[in-house]
Image (cartoon, rainbow, N blue to C red; front, side, top):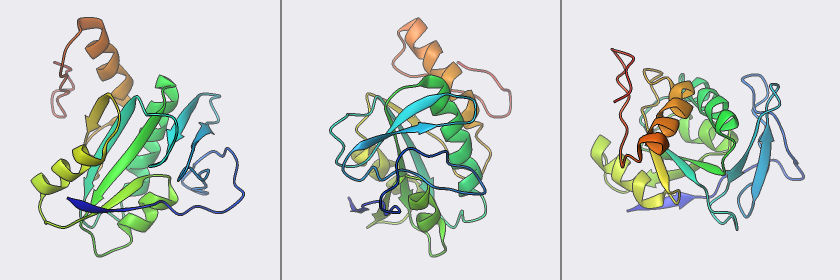
Length: 173
């Protein structure tokens, strides 16, 4: 469905704290790396060829989200640190701006779509995702990814196959 792009990272990087000021992420292309936050939380960020299978895959379709993608990825990191589970971020991209570069710089697995469109982006992201739990949300900052731990805890507690959060109502169903 897509041409997967291996993330490019600075060589020799160990664990790092991705921040808006310094989006440095460990090289996870062949491994997984522990990503720490200032709050002390950690999670394993899994690359596309990591020996560690991610438990959670966050799939984000993008189209010209250069202005928002970094903020969205920071919120995803916050949630994943709280969960503390091996995770991956898959960005299914159709952009002509810097969105895919910014996503790669933050450790996301970026795919370039063969077929354009929102549905195609999600299908491509799902096809690439390896986690047992798939989270989906847009890159336009309308989804509060920091609520992700509540969604996953609700899913586990209720043994649900699917959990949906409502953006306008702030409810988890």
